[in-house]
Image 1 (cartoon, one colour):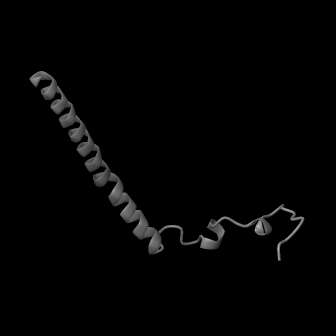
Image 2 (cartoon, rainbow, N blue to C red):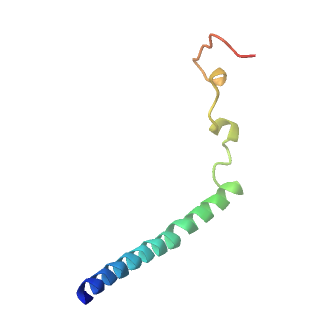
Length: 73
């Protein structure tokens, strides 16, 4: 009984250790990148020539080469 409980405890320890490692790796590498890129985009350092109207998905009537047979009024 003690060997099985020690083995389960060891597996739990490995699970927690690996989870903590990958969580810290994510927080240390990805989150600062998101913050700096978000701030740069907000303050106009990136994509300052692109209008938000060009980025959004256009409706069918706004798309080129689309012929509407019926328009709901």
